[in-house]
Length: 184
Image (tube, rainbow, N blue to C red):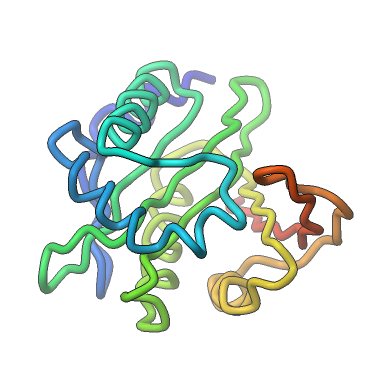
């Protein structure tokens, strides 16, 4: 399966509260601002660092390569009413032989607890259910991120177990809950 063909025509997805758009190099400064605002929360659980706009541009270029190769798929999350970039949602670990991927997403700190994450995840899942051949989407959540766990449950994910020392970020091991959703 070449996922690149399934993604090639997608430019944006409309949710109730958010718009999800393909990442573009012109978004690098706005993406960096959202990451920088949320760095304290993000860096505890994200293995990457963005210390300058060039890091955000590098992530965007890597994402564009992932689209072309069909190995990953990331979209910027914008607030529908204001067009403010507030996060990123995506799939990684897309395997051409197994119709599954691993979800990751984040919403900047100042915009959390407004239902934007749930709307982004719901909108994203609807697209993948209706327009792609994926059968399963997984996500691993650090145990102390209860808000994200509640969002995933609302979106139909089911807890499947706990992985001890499942995530190493900046030299610190985190236990993670494993969640999954079947699309077919």
